[in-house]
Amino acid sequence: MSSPILEVRNLKKYFRLSGNRTLKAVDDVSFAVNEGEILGIVGESGCGKTTCGRTAIGLYSKTAGEALFRGEDIHKMSKSKRKQYCCEVQTVFQDPYASLDPKNKVIDLIAEGMDIHKFYTSKGERREKIEEIMSQVGLNPSFVDRYPFEFSGGMRQRIGIARALAVNPKLILCDEPISALDVSIQAQIINLLMELREKNNLTYMIISHDLSMVKHISDRILVMYLGEVVEESTADALYENPLHPYTQALISAIPIPDPKVECARKRIVLTGQLPSPVNPPEGCRFAGRCPMAEAKCFDCKPELKTVEDGHKVACHKY
Image 1 (tube, rainbow, N blue to C red):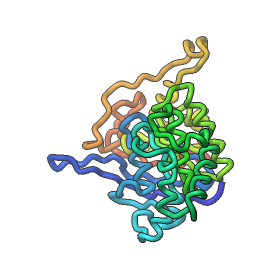
Image 2: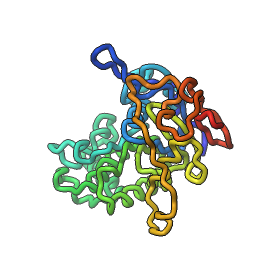
Image 3: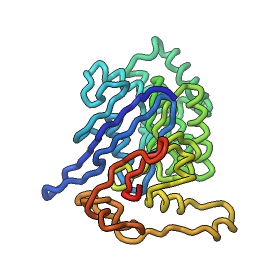
Image 4: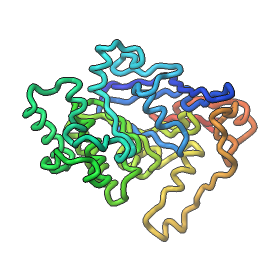
C-alpha cells in the first residue's frame, strides 16, 4: 500500500425530484483509496453505494464536497487533464448485456478508448493490441471479429474488463461486476480481477451487496446505509468483529456452507421500515431498525470516528 490515489471528502450527491423534493443519495461521505489496494463498498440495495462510486470518479456531477485524484479535484479538471484522467480511471459495469453495444464487433468495443486517445499507429498494431488484451482476460483472440450476442454473460463481462484495460488504467471502478452472472462464472471473474491486479498494478473500488465476495477480494471495506458510511475497516477486522449493529445484521445473513454451523448460529432479523432518502431521520438513520437504539440515537446524529486501529464506526455505543 502507498499514498491515496483517490480521496473523497464530504461528498454529497442529491437528486431533485418533482414537488420540490430532494433525494439525498450520498450525504457527506469521506474515504480514501490507497494505490494498489482493493476497497469494497457494501450495503443493501438503494443505500447509495453505486451513486457514491460513480460520483467519486466523476461519472456523476457532485452536489458538494471534493473528489481528488492524485490531489486534483476531478470535478474541476481542465479539458486536457480530464482526457488523460479518463485513461487512468475506468469502469466495469454491472450488466454485461446492456453495457456492450450489440451493433459493434468485439474489436471495436475494446478499442473504443484506444481510438479516442490514439494508442496505436496502424490498424495492424491496433488489432495486435486487442488480441493481446483478449488473451489477458481469458478470451480467444480469434473471436475478435464476433458480435456480443455470440458470447455468454461471463465472456461478455470479460469483454467489458478488456475494454477497461485497453487504455492502461490505474484505478478501476467495478460496479456489481458479478451480480448478473451465473454462480459458476462468478468465481472466474473475481479470480481474473485479482490476477490482473497483480500483473497490471491496478487499484480497484468494488461495489457489491455480496459480502462473502467482498471479504474474499477486498483489503478494506466501507459499509453504507441510506447514503452514509456507518463503518470502515480492514476486511478481516470487519468480519471478525463488526461493530455497527447494521454491519452485524448484514454479516449474520451470510450463509455458511455447513448445516450444523448454519442451524446453530443466531440470525439478526431487522424490524421496522427503511427510512426514505427524501426525508431521512435527524438522528441516526438506522435507529428505527436498530435493536440497541436509545433515546439519543433518534435525536443526535453519530459521527464516523476511529474506535480501534483503522476501524471506524458511526454509532453512539462507542
